[in-house]
Amino acid sequence: MLLHIPEVLSEQEVRRVRAILAEGQWADGRITAGSQSAQAKNNLQLPDNAPAAVQARAIVMEGLHRSALFFTAALPKTIYPPLFNRYGGVANAFGNHVDNAVRTIAASGERVRTDLSATLFLSEPDEYEGGELVIEDTFGTQTVKLAAGDMILYPSSSVHRVEPVTRGERLASFFWIQSLVREAERRRLLFEMDMAILALRTDLGEIAPAVSLTACYHNLLRMWAAP
Image 1 (spheres, helix red, strand yellow):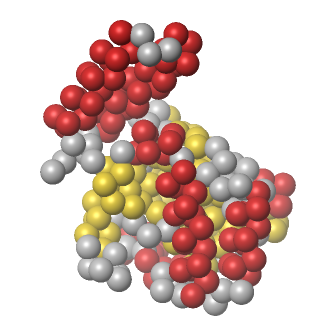
Image 2 (cartoon, one colour; image 1 turned 90 degrees about the vertical axis):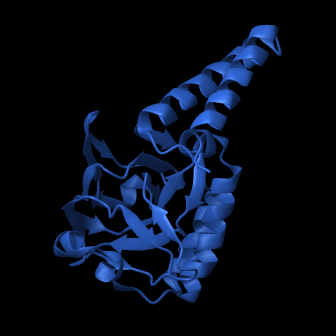
């Protein structure tokens, strides 16, 4: 499932994050790349323990915790601490690659299975040329370039790339999610059911069928969620 999640960060939050990132000490983006990805990766990245990364990460996490759409789509068990990258100049692209299946959180040593990948855009589309996120999966090839503060959620198993930035600068946050529900098909069914229940409640209120469907949703989640 490929899902656009709008306004994860407000305009004010985007400005705060960008001001923090402007003071950051950027490094070669290959610091978090696997062996295959490192050959395709040409961008800049903040080290995960850099002060600017820590400050900006807290703002991104606040936005994620507010987003009901993110939670119903991802059903997150663990969110890998958000990272930040920059594309522009000679460090301007990331070729075709697949994200590592398991990532280790440096601060805790916790291992995270990457069920879902997320890119949160921090630059407006008209601030740069190129820089599209291209995702290839069973849903076909999709090209994504969103407003600042918006996020794209997609399967970590997808082949994806960032096209070369030929003008300006592309800033983004990126991270991975281990879901409570490992199977993508089950997550999609739960997401579609939750959206249908929300629409039913909005139109008709807490009628008996809405209550019954809500019970079905939670019983399925209880059955499928990882311990």
